[in-house]
Image (cartoon, rainbow, N blue to C red; front, top):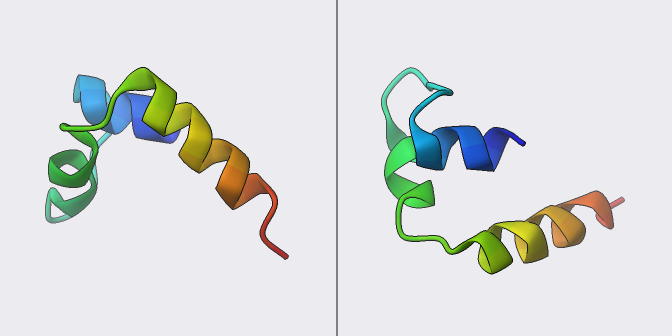
Length: 41
């Protein structure tokens, strides 16, 4: 959810790094990243 928020600019971070990083991501890429991160120990 947070990555989608950064992309939609409804979530913010202190220096805008995550917002800038999320902008070029597609919905499929965001979903893939979420699955990857969820699987990390």
